[in-house]
Length: 64
Image (cartoon, rainbow, N blue to C red; front, side):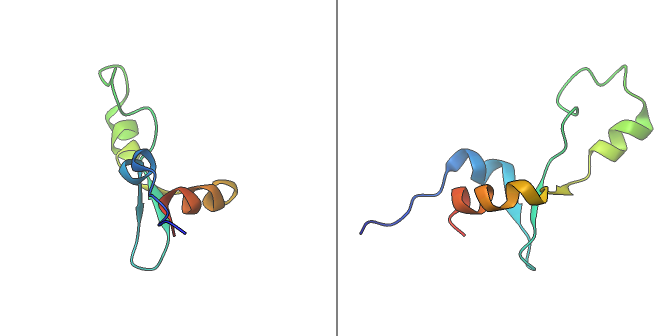
């Protein structure tokens, strides 16, 4: 059976931490930042954990 290929789109969007958690960027930080408050843009700059309902799908895409 051939090797499973990692989904490159998923690999670019998600990172796996050393403890095995899957992290992602938050939405609303790509553009139109002038109208958003500094507090909001700082908060959106942090990575967050992937929601529990999506973990199984993302693990499969990443080949974990």
